[in-house]
Length: 419
Image 1: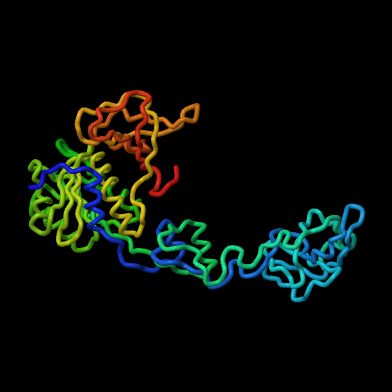
Image 2: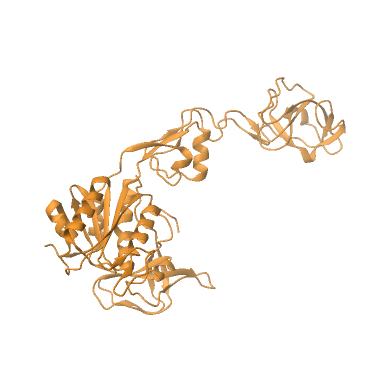
């Protein structure tokens, strides 16, 4: 029996030491959104592949407008039209201009674009065959996007470890990366344990409660990026728990159980881990969620969480989510921490580190303030649902006075967020 209460940081390090980024797979660029790349992605062409117009207007030789002014307009002949998918095949000569649309390739001979609104049409409708006047000079390159403005052929447009955004998916597509290499989603198996538990669709009888933990943990694992597998509800029976857990171990990369401590601190899952593998810790200096077990069952990491819903959710947040993110190839595993002024006294009557469900906001002066939920009962999920942070009270500190600054873990923001 371990039964040694260890610091959260030590527990997290142990968990992370026993998971690794998973094997590499290919995904269409758009389906990789939110995932870090496993390999660099390079473009096969210049981006953009040709110089193009930044606006609707007229492409011309800037030298033709060198002497243009309000009282001395330069008059040019419109000899062609450039639009998306329609290329002017000729060359712009002295005294000539081409009507051009935004994004269209710059015609040969032209080195500047003048926007349509400032051009005076003298003859015709402004298109080919017209004569137009310009009353100001235009420098070389004016309103022109150069070829290779974003990247040149062969250059890396997104590095390994960078998380693909929606805009990034478009960038990858423009670079010819129709598919990209990312880490396989970890399969996370979830099992609820307790004879008293019933399915959420069932009206509980006396002495029964609906299983809330599996829904919360499955949703959290899905939100973290995992593929989830529900192992159902197991009664407090050693044989049933063993069958359910080993079934998940056979098909999952990580197994999470909640509840099951019906025989006191020595529960069946922990005993199973000792028989089939190793228990690496079973107590953490944490509230809510002190009784958390982590180990290996047949070399598959498993995490045994409390049956109390809020404690199970906080335990998942602190330990399982970082593990899932590492398996997906993320290099940052912890949520951002923000310091805020507490709006009321926060008391702590135990030595353990506390993570109170709370909400950070800005007051009328723009200062960050934090307010804890009125109840920190570990059976309540509503307070966590309405929270955007966990207010941390470290070991050795009895609490905070009103006006003190406290660190707040922003559970509403992804890892690596700048705040």
